[in-house]
Length: 182
Figure (cartoon, rainbow, N blue to C red):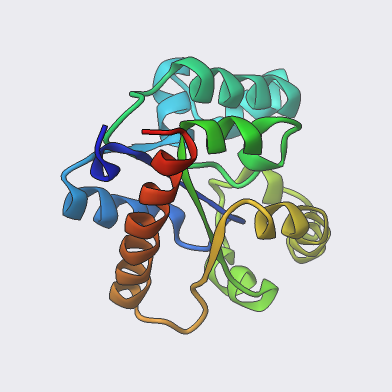
């Protein structure tokens, strides 16, 4: 296996740019691109909001775990992970066994601006979305910060974020293989 074969997992809070950045990075690397949320929606034949409404968050989190454990290629794939995926018990370790993990990070203010008015985020379908974001952020941020290299996306041009992700991926993929004796 070569460093360029190692999977890349982008994690972070909603609105940090995981989907957009991962799509561009995958194209530049010549890798497959998968968004875990989109893939689960495709497999289930319904939107995540409906899954949350009918089966609950726990059922959705199990679908995320199944996707990581069995639902995507083991090499040459860039995965944009749903915001809550890495927060689940054991999921960070699972991702780190499978490839390079990079966290895209933004301030709460940036996230509020980027997610304002979004109807496609079931966790924000509450009376006070700002409070919900602040509460989730407070719980999730420590996990994101220890998940891998952290790249700030606030007030940075998208191309700059993409280039930074590419540099970190190339460095961390070598370390990933060395740690496994490959």
